[in-house]
Amino acid sequence: MKRIIKMIFSIIAAVIVVLVIVVVLFIKLSPEFGGEISKELKVAYSNSENYSKGKFVNKGNVNLEMSLELMTKMIRQFLKAHPNTLPANNIDVQKIDSSRIAENTSETKLFWFGHSTFLLEIAGKNILIDPMLGDVPAPHPLLGNNRFSRDVPLSIEQMPRIDAVVLSHDHYDHLDYGSILKLKDKVKRFYVPLGLGAHLKEWGVSAEKIIELDWWEEVVQDGVVFKCAPAQHFSGRGVTDRMTTLWASWVIKSDQENIFFSGDSGYGSHFKEIGEKYGPFDFAMMECGQYNELWSDIHMFPEETVQAALDVKARRMMPIHWGAFKLAMHEWTDPVERVLKKAKDLNVEIVVPQIGAEINMNKAILEQPEWWKQ
Image 1: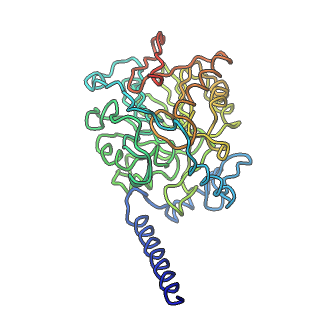
Image 2: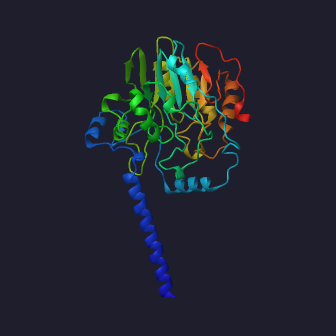
Image 3: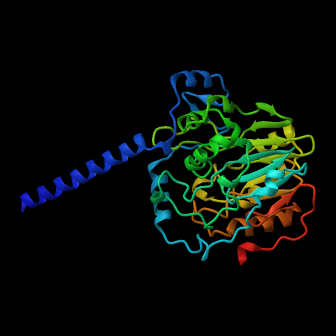
């Protein structure tokens, strides 16, 4: 009997060792995890006010330490059954006419691809924001849920030349390896927070195309101003690279429009700072989804989203970070239903377009069908 028990334990130990080896090899060899921050870059980043002891940091008392108790609570929540976290059916999207994008008039237009991905036409330029156009926001398809819609409004292959790609941080639902591989040869510039360039270079993007910015830094390209602004979040694609790259929100400004993109962020005083320094904004895309009490410091609740829009002085806001992927346990329509209610209470103009629908900054939004109910 002892011999059998010993054999069973030996087999279990061997399986665990093999699994550990497989995981380590996957992390080391899989290109999806991106590049590493060199010692030289760490020295350069130490000049940033947002960098301390080899890591980027949030302002204020934001605790991102993952205690065993917190990890246990999160695992228990994810293992529980949560109804309606996924749509019952495939979500229909409006297809974008690639020829109209190629024409690129002087009007400022915005197209939502679900979650936090946008195609922005501004000052005659095509700008992609957080282009996650893959099916699963994870380093492997088995590690995440599929996109809610089978299609995206416009494939990368159909897109015209892209003047700029703007990235908010390096999480898989915002920085997608497969999308970057397809995009890199048709993009003129990549604007990223400090450190993200390491991933792009690892994936074959030329260093000359990459411009890294710290919070409150800005750069001008062909009459369009790109301003890197604070957010309250974190970063990391693997096991050992947590907080080694910066996260950010962005301001994109032309002679006619001033636009704000929140990226991922918990609610904090930085929104008022941004509003005072860069506002008012004609349009603000504000994070509103994938929230939970266990991580409220890094993702806003819908009611906070509306307040943040007021803080940045947005004339019109749109809830984002929902409608494409399941990354939390709330019902998939909870973000839009709660944010609409709060916006009505606070008299905030809100836009909730169908995925792929055109938002024209020069025209009033006359009709907004509740497509998520259909």
